[in-house]
Length: 279
Image 1 (cartoon, rainbow, N blue to C red):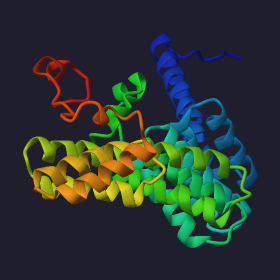
Image 2: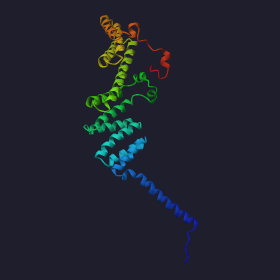
Image 3: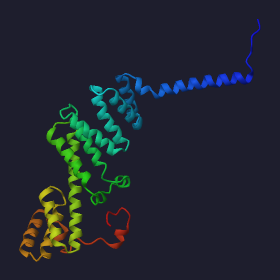
Image 4: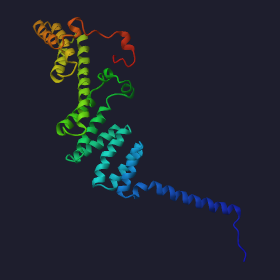
């Protein structure tokens, strides 16, 4: 019996088509994995990606899990993990939206304390640029818009108030102290600006705000000194003397007590130094 052989060209064409179909099937299966895995294995896959710092892949897997399985314990935990993955993937807007939605949907969830903590962290890291965080320039931080700092402080404050025994409460309180000082320094920076420009009512208002709202911040002494100078500028000598006495009683080593021209304007050279915190 004669065996008919395919011409060499036809053989390679058939082989190429077979390999192409095999490859398409393989890639199609890989692409559809998140659409076919059961919930526990899909969660495990997402969690493994997160553990290996592949936050983009983790976010995609968590999002697919949430879409395919819209209820249950895996869904709720996936929402928390998704927010964390987005946060680590430098997607703060997405992370904030995800965690905020979780808090509103599950206000009594057993891990809602972590949700408040994570929301605080998201806002905490949105206030400064990467270079400023690397150089740890607190002064530069205090000259930026403070909206995210205020939100972060509120999140940590609510966590500490509602869940004082939470595993995250101690760290939240430490961050609140840092944020309080940054917010106080921001007000001092503005008060100094007004003082240098002889806008004494405005500088006094800013200094008074620090005294009333950030009493335990180290900037309170600076606020009393600026308030004293502001009263002198407004020719309110009695109020100036009273404020100076309070300053001397509580901050006997404050530089203003020895130098009545404190605070001094930053030098032109210092203003020109990058990241010096002055502009």
